Length: 222
Ligand code: SF4
Image 1 (cartoon, rainbow, N blue to C red):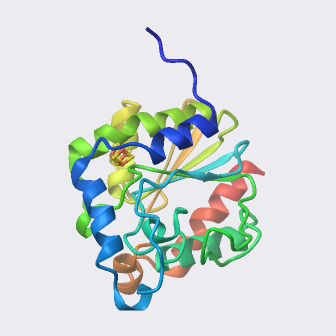
Image 2 (image 1 turned 90 degrees about the vertical axis):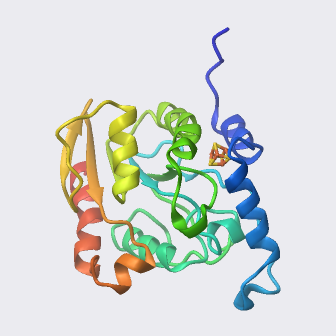
């Protein structure tokens, strides 16, 4: 039987209730009980985190997975950690978000013509996903991409998101390099380093090079 086309609400529900990857589900829960000191008083989301944003978006951002103490705590992608600080500051400066901060799920943040998806929707230990976990979650990514039918630009954050996207859509000859761009089925794909703490603190990703990704997206969309 052919599965009926999902809408955003049913897809979100399916993601939140998914238990396919036992290792990740257990990890999300254990992080929520063995809290770090700075979040001792927080009640963690501790479940798969769905995508969010403008359902008519022309810009799609594909991250890696929820941060352990970021999205896994707050329940919204890129919310409550330093990756989110970098992401939304750049999106605000280029007109893709109404504010530059992303502290908790009721902080008033709205994405403007942009939507955030993920390679996997559960936080992995040490930020490392197993290939079967990426495969398990890829049907959620393709379901989002089907629904987001006004997309013009897709930014893949980091080598894992990039590789997975290329694998799903059988794209060859698009090596990962920061600001590399590729036309695929009338959508412009932009490769970018992920704004993880590791990349920003080591200066592998500097602010100007990061902001340039969103200026490029803005130029294509406008
Ligand atoms: S990573 Fe994706 S497929 Fe795996 S349990 Fe989480 S939501 Fe389900």
